Length: 461
Image 1 (spheres, rainbow, N blue to C red):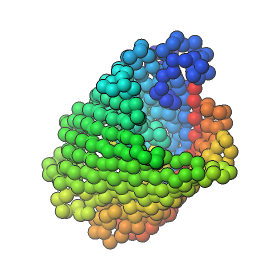
Image 2: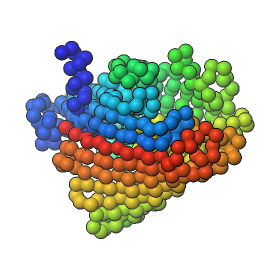
Image 3: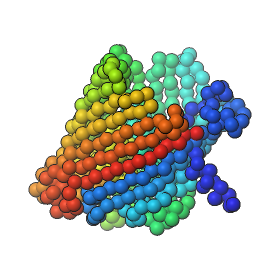
Image 4: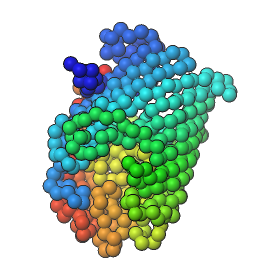
């Protein structure tokens, strides 16, 4: 067996469940205990095979159905040497079967080291009880609400960043995060190589600089407040054409987490300004003035009752481009955020996105027993601007005659631990009920209501 085949086999059997490093053997998993690892060393893992299928696609230029059988695996290792920690993480997201050439190619990244970094921690940094952690190398990021910078949960792929990050945490739980990074670009890029599960090291995209500062502070009555500033500077490269985005995103958030017998709230508002081009075409050299915004509103209540039900109402808005001819860019750019936790499954579904969207919804969550949970969510979907495209589907009516009503999405999910904290089954699906826009837009598929389903098993070591 070659070294590469050995690494592939290992990566397909292991995945990370969390980055924390335990020094006490009593906190180690049974897998780690069986390895007999020395103090300061942690290796954790899991594997998640998943089958998913779409009937009546809504993506412009596609017809019929789509399906994907894939497996996502990660191997996470840490070496804690006191103030210095070394971390490595290997992702293996590979294609096992399904329709080649459709959306499945967006879920493949074979044998990729998505994290390789060194961290240094300074205790009592600047004030007693505080700590400062600095990271350098390649890493993933979850920041704030995760709507703009996130390590995705549902998608097989994870966005890596090359650069530096510093996180200061005060004794009162105030937290400040600052970073200066370049995102990585998946390799290989061509579909035949991806569907052959060919491995290539993801390249650092030197044409993009992403910097930011995020402040998270406690407020009265169990509320936390956040403010942030993110800057994205993108330039064309010979091997990576771009829209030359130069964006400044400023936002704030107020959140009170869900708790039994209490109300919870989540309000976030972000504004973007700068310039961007309409396309990545080499002949497109016109910088458009960019002005866009994003809004999330949610209020919920968790009942102290059998099955611990929580009900919430929510609304999401992300501006679109009012006109393709006005010399301005108004479509909100979601940067590197996740959307599955609010907009439903991504992967080969990915119906909704934070761009040209106006969507109220209702969500119900409950726990039939201690080992399982259920999610039901219904969203009404409209375009913020009638002449801009819908989400990432490519469906557009530049005249605006098709209107704004996209339809309704119904989502359902059931999860159950088959072996506590080790093996979990998840089954879910979504349905799009077509509205006038998807019925009348000139490049819509006109295939009727789209349906999606998936099943997966996560095995955590």
